[in-house]
Length: 379
Length: 152
Image 1 (cartoon, rainbow over the protein chains, first blue to last red):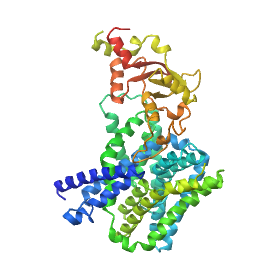
Image 2 (tube, rainbow over the protein chains, first blue to last red):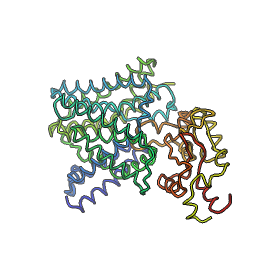
Image 3 (tube, rainbow over the protein chains, first blue to last red):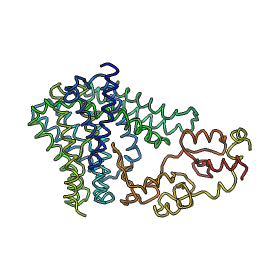
Image 4 (tube, rainbow over the protein chains, first blue to last red):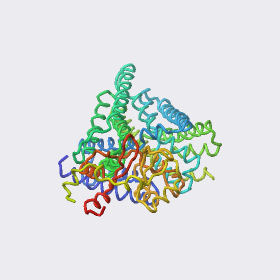
């Protein structure tokens, strides 16, 4: 791709993403869906077909991958070690139910469709993490954010992002199971050692302008590379780099900085790339996969979270509302599916189908969750 | 006072008693109503472990309150519980719910110039003066300005 074509398409994609995203926000839908739609517009099926310009290229893929790294870093630093530590026992129990059922239901979809064990595990991984944004907006509208249901949903949504990343690392790393276990252990040892060292080094005075921001970005990229070198996914490294830096006294500044460069440029380019990769031809062969994948994705969360919440003392209707509130999938699900595709877990044809099915899951759960939550949850 | 000379001085040399005893301080379990009451008169409040203690555990500024007063905005990419803390939806109940937990700080032995650089690099207008994890005073841009112009 020539540099002028790259600049033209990226420029066009960014403004389209912002405009469509804003329009969707106005009708209380996530802006991310607008970014995916913008990707479809600049992709091979619309602008690509009309003007013969191809958005999908190694350059746009690399930009999108930097977007993933920043997105997971943001996730790690915003969730933070302290928030994980302060999660209630009930939240932890519900998350265990939630993650196990979501993963298991995904695995069953793969198994029923006759895919290999590794592909079934990969499908299970996609379904673990929840997107809390749409549920928070709905709970705000219902003035139920401070209710037991609201608090439970928020705690579980925070924890299941962590579970999602850990499960992905453990199940899809490279190497034999024994070697993989060693690599995962080594990675977490390095994580803990860095956390310990960071808590000991408090009074280093370096008065270089913007040193904190530059060194944090540098640390993020090196930690992501380290995870990749150990055979784990780079996103595992970026998520844990975020967790490590969440204890820094510069946390707020880092969040603001990452949000600025991430939200304005790199992260939309990831979702645009997902949209551009959406293969309409894959829809033809999607029938049974979609028929199983989407309902099972929703059921896994409803059953897992409702059971967990019930065990933790919530009454029937409230426990069910927790399950409904946990249904939406968005950012992390798309990150997991694209990571698995780049790891070569799926064949080329299946990769297009799984990506298309995940994009449909994102859209459907975002649309129906507010309606279902308002119907089920009565105060 | 000459600015160059002021930058070379240590915090302990320019600090007067008022900066030590008139500190706005609140305990972390204090109600949000109490925090708001203090912020009607001050632009920040230091948060300490418990009543009578000086162990610093956070700070709440006007900017934090501004975010709580404005209609809540859920960002495009949402992670963690930060965006669910709200006055409107009663999820902000105590000082510890809204405070910034990790606070940049300075000590009595620091030079004024270094402290100002720290403020510039961290985007802050005030720093607590901390000895053995206990807050013993504060230094603000406002105070340094007054010192420079000889008003105190």
